[in-house]
Length: 109
Image 1: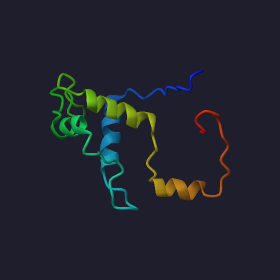
Image 2: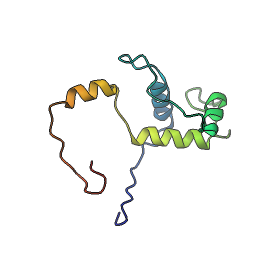
Image 3: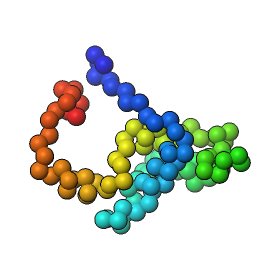
Image 4: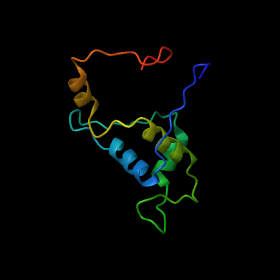
């Protein structure tokens, strides 16, 4: 914290994380574009997300014995930045007239 590093805990629920990734890959109803995009330089996650198998014991989860490190990193990242089910356009519209108060001098939020 003294050096400006702030860790945010993530929701470790695997099923919720998988659902959040699917939700963000779906098109935003306002823009008709995906909420999550991958750069061509993100080769590991592109490979993993396209071919990660489902769990044999729980069809709502992925196979944790498969190579899933990049997938897990994405899932944890998504779960630390939960945006609810509102699109960015809905969020901007709802906070348009609110005054932003800086909570943290280092990060500004």
